[in-house]
Image (cartoon, rainbow, N blue to C red):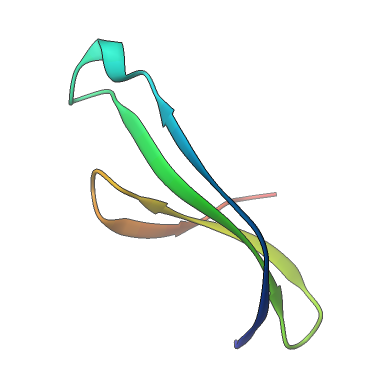
Length: 55
């Protein structure tokens, strides 16, 4: 699976008032793959882990 293009990206910071255990800090990417498929992935900035968003 190769990425052809980054179509969009944005950062989400939320729930920070709940403390470090519940804070959300993510960097989202909408990617267009070489096959033409579009997927959304995000980097959890707290856990430093990548995830593919379902849907």
